[in-house]
Amino acid sequence: MILAMELVYGGFAQIIAGMMEFRKGNTFGVAAFTSYGLFWVSFVLLLLLPEFGIATETPDVYMGWYLLSWGLLTLFMFFATPKVNKSLQFVFASLALLFILLAARDFTGSEQIGTLAGKA
Image (tube, rainbow, N blue to C red; front, side, top):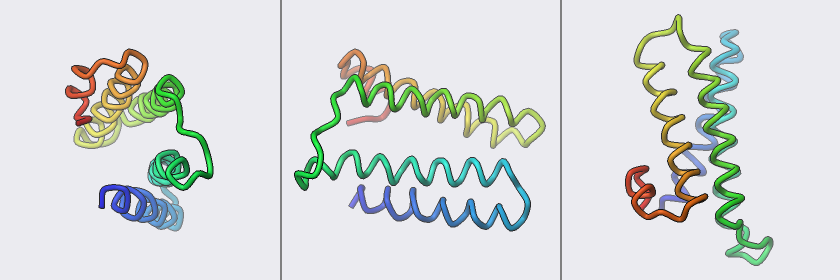
């Protein structure tokens, strides 16, 4: 159920929203929505492909680098929002923190950091 939601709502719906932002001429919206939509699609594939025997499981440290990369991109996106409303700034700041915490969990194997990041 969670993977389906990640793929459809997190992935495809955000990609569609990004294309809608393109029609409005909102470059930031295009970059944000399509990037995070494709993040969810790629994340689901990283989890599912090993289950189907198509790929090997991603080692934790590699997943840590993957998540850290998204955290840095999100941090850059946060710095691009100073003239936007405060709620959007909060979304990007908290999302950057989340990605960095998830990466730290994968680098260290710490269950406490995982719990702090919301990973059960």
